[in-house]
Image 1 (tube, helix red, strand yellow):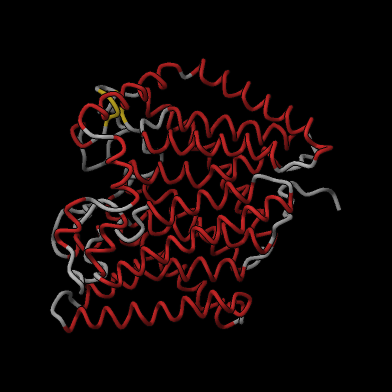
Image 2: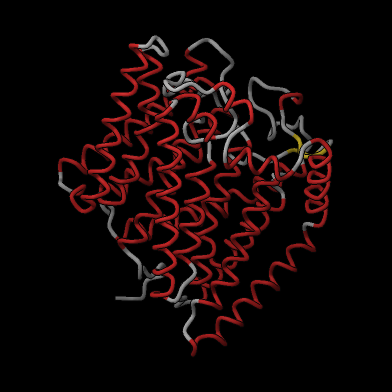
Amino acid sequence: MSRAGQIFLAVFFILVYEGAVRKWATGAATLPLIAMRDLLALALIVMAWRRGHLRRNRKITAALFAWSLLVFGWGLLQLAGGESSPVIFILGLRFWLLYTWFAIAAAASMNEADYRAFILMAAWMTLIMAPLAVVQHFSPPGSRINTQLDGDEESVFVAVSGVVRTTGTFSFTTGYSMFIALVAPVVFGLLSARKRRTSHKLLAIATFAAFMAGSFVSGSRTTVIASAMMFMVYLVGRLAFSKMKQKPTAAVAVVVALALFGIFTLFFQEAILVTQTRFEEASAVEDFWERIVTILVAEPHVFNSFNWLGAGIGYGSNLANYVRGGAGGAITLAESEGGRLLLEGGLLGIVYVVLKLVVSVIGVAKSLRLSRKTNSPFPVIVWLTAAMAIITWTASGQLTANGMIGIILAFALLLFRFPTLEIFRGRA
């Protein structure tokens, strides 16, 4: 592995397990852990620049540099207009730029061994996360495994009365939902990959089982819907993208995956019933399609509060709210990513939302061509997940989401550098 790959995996490891330290060890570790992974991300960017790796993606680097200058200049304009403060401005640069640069630097610097190591690390993390989530699901809300050091039963989110929304190693439900979405391409990539030994097949099946179990017990409508969509894309893509002579093998793989899914549903009937109840209770108090529009676009109040200059980049983040003396972990301005960008950046926020859409469309289109070329659904699943993350994840407001977006974006960009990666290597 390269030094860049080691740093990338270190950032990923901290992202997944920093919440566990805060929940069950000490809340004082929050800022040191965030500072540690931010410094590691910055170190990778500097290393990629000094070693010339960024020249591998000249067009992307040039576009991101121009965007960074525009964000910096707009932030100064907001300072001059009295809509921000120096501290909020610095936090805004962090939330709007740092992990995007991290993703570009990682994608340009990492080698094939690093890429393979990340996929296998994510698979083993899934195997570890699933049993923890299952125990949390079947434990009462007030149990030690479901509460934080400084919290109580009242602060624990529940799917239905007496059943928690699982958080895994994360301090909040959002982090767990993003982790499940992030590992979905890894899970289906392992199922699609050529397996040379029995241990490879067992790892692929075990990871798929852990992924399904983690989705069933999540108690999150978003997680269940996203997991089901990725599973359907895998089933359809496995048949559609395979070569004609490989269609029978692909059909067998699809049947086996459906059979495994059916078996898992028998073991997790109680969790499925909880999720169904969650959908019914939510539909009684909110319109489902209105919720979808809010996630993809913005809340209705955003358009009434919008002004051309914006409140200041970074103003709506949970870290900025903590600095201002507000509630720790609370996100202000808007819940949706698009709404927060519009209220923080004003006209620049509109440009940012459009850029996200453009990048997502280009990435998915290129991944479709790559899936046809490689006869695998893996590229499409990766970029559909990345597009969902780019558009909907609260990357500009929530610390974990901000780091996770860098991981999934680097993952998606590495796909174009190593389109024929063999996850399971043969003997030399």
